[in-house]
Length: 377
Length: 196
Image 1 (spheres, rainbow over the protein chains, first blue to last red):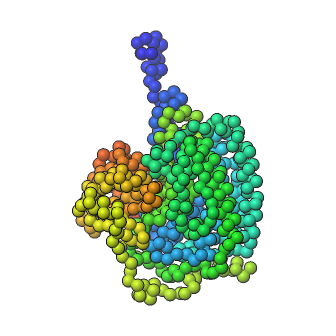
Image 2: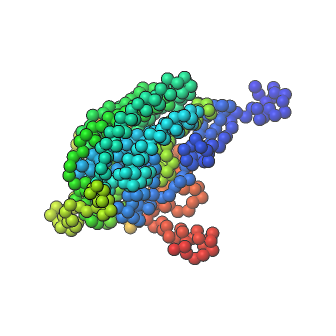
């Protein structure tokens, strides 16, 4: 239909096919302060532009003005729903700079805490993602189970969210009495609950219809965009840093890497659900065998790594979380770069959303599992 | 219960040996040469454009001329399976003539290897954008531009990403003073000399 053939006065309006719609930064389903500018053709998304930085605190600059130990609590505030994982990555990176390793006991406790954190992070993702798509119930369920993990963290180090659980060289705190019992209890309680969530969602017709073939990213595209974590595994790439380049003693534990083939939002859901089961498997093995011994390595009182640079990365709940630290031999990092998984994964939003319906954008943002605190740093 | 009282005390390494005596016996670790089939093929292909192949703490990296970076990354992707660009970042050394170190981290899924590429660039030099080779370079390079002011030639969308568009200065440069920025802000907005 051309403008000439249309007798209506507002034909120019009807003719213009592109509509620009602003979403966020204050929007409940953007999981923080993400602003997405959507270009629409009718109901179809023909392009997106992410505006980020609303939570930018300059963490990397702060690091250059703090000693290594002083900076450790800051990393918890990046991905604040997986603070323990952030702390583990940072401690491992500084330990690498110092050419030392945490003692075995500390390593096992670290594995227990990070796997609990992985479950907590995935649970929060599940609850909010389901809420975004329209299922209200799972949010209350997952909060109930997440609370049990928070309680374990609280008993261990006194904090629930930004835990600062680990120290460079090991742990500050000896494990509290009853940690093993608590973790075992949690594992026993949690698996039936997982089945409960799956009963609510996995075969749910609306859930399947809303997620299948939405936000597809195949393996090739994932690699192109540097996408890691559950998103990459949902596209069929069996890659997990805990297996590929084990750290903190992960090579001792038996677990599988769940993968799926389609790389859509539904597959990412399945992968994350199975990852929680694998985490429980690791937890059960780890609490069975916490070796005795010291919890701190031979760390000098003043942490002054020799001049040099390292890049250390871990499998955080959201993907590869890396720290690149340059030391000039002083007590403060000369340069500290964080490679945040959410930041890199979010870049693929445009690729996933192009051609999708506007009703699906919320599901697509949710499936990436972003935390804006980590994206903006 | 006795264990629970430990948290109150700060961490005590089992042997309170300070850094000095510990560092005395072994000399401070330094990078060692890195040699493999990969380095040989790279050396053959790029010759003196790559100045050094080194490893530090078990992590291999190479130092190259900035204009060769694009070719090396492309070669590594096509010929050596380094198909995942992990990170692009930089470091600032204001005392040097070529003040910035550009750092690229690459990973190969098939080899399960991670390598780093480094190049020193002077202020104003525009390294070629890697976005045509790795799509992920788009945002990563935007962040480097945002934080260091290094513009990438041929980048599809060279805008700031984390800082506001009208921001002055590049925060991660060493000569960017947080204190000065703060003083300027309080002068403009609160009409006081310093908030410190």
